[in-house]
Length: 614
Image 1 (spheres, rainbow, N blue to C red):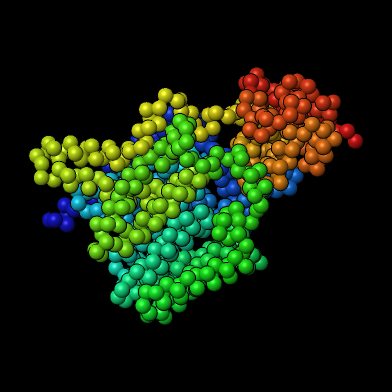
Image 2 (cartoon, helix red, strand yellow):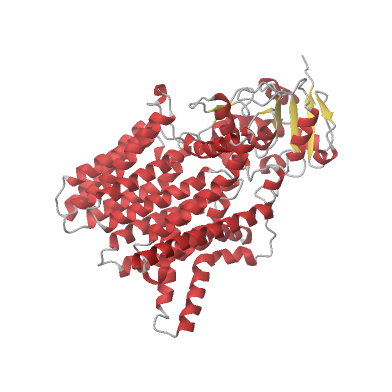
């Protein structure tokens, strides 16, 4: 009877959470309105569905080049296949029931991130359960993930983004790592933790932000242990081995054999396998050192330094992550106009709104960190405190530097932060029932909503969608599809485009236009297309017509499209005699011909045809 009751309660929890997730994302879809117009939330979402469509059309598993951007060549994308498959499989099922494949891919893309959001919330509760059984505090972890600002941002309906999958995998990994830290003989959990982390790195090397503190934690536990330190070295080796096995599998599945030994910093490759193998080797050596603490420390410093030096020699700049193999100047070209790569230190009202809006309830874990390290210092839970504290603080620093990393912080913030609910409930444990109820409600509000109340109380108006402050290219897409300039006979969009080339002043809207139309575009917001972005910026900012013509000719541009209400900062601050500002004033050079567009498109855009001068 007890088991039946617990089972019933478990299914009820899941059902309530499912309804809450569905209600949240339905209301968000209604509020933002992009689904009603057949749109998506951001540029990456459009590019992801283009990638899935091209996989379906070409059947080329190893194809990482898209003809939609990077014209007249192709853009190399650093994304990997797991999320593509998670989108494509439901789409194929919908297609079997009669839906057109393009629409099936679209609707699969609409629902994939909310579905992953729901799974991540369940995984967070299960990860926290061994730590916070009192007052059902572990259940609050699910609500924290569900209502976290960063999690909502990356799990929006119509935003098929790999960060939603990364959030789930991070939580699955930390859940197993907790169990491995609770019991140093639990080999299976250590292997599973490394394996889930390996899938996360397969999705995106950004997941290393959670791998590094886990490895450091096992190393510190090995150094700190007075009895049987080898047990923690073995756990570190098991974690690293699980990580390495998955990365080896990922490389063989993701890359053609000719590329297996090629290192890529921004995509799972030999580099990441070498990191995992080096960690496994270091922990294996640690197992062979049954020495007192000081000799162990000196040996660990030597081994770790030797490993780092070897990795730096083989893969210069590996410690810089996905952008480790590009120069600072090249990175600046890419980073300047990518909002999600910007820092969110709360230095003024706008940045404070962004800080609390993205990190929000993850801040509930801050007071829990010192509590765990102190209260659990002589308990079985102390290794977990070390693991989670290092992971949380590392992710917090990462999120402050690049706001897109806040989604990883959500995982650790929920597992730790739900403990604050339990600690607050302890304060009224001996009080009257009404006092306990009020305390629970107050604690739930503080923990689940937390700092996210700040932007809700702010007098600044939030955009209706992620791109609400920018030009809306849908009207241009509608006009291009109706007038199809430069295309005599419109044909279905295929994986290999041979259509006219359009250059824009901004990297933000070409992916949507490429998704909605069959045209090719010079560049988009992707660091592998840094040369494309440099040419776009140079064309817009040049005051020399000959320099502009050289770029136009080299890029084989047929049309120039510009937004007149929003412009990248560097272009907006360029010379008044730059090509962009001249066109904005109506001072059109002889080698460009203005094109009349629809009234709706003309409200925000201007388009020009290139006259061939030779």
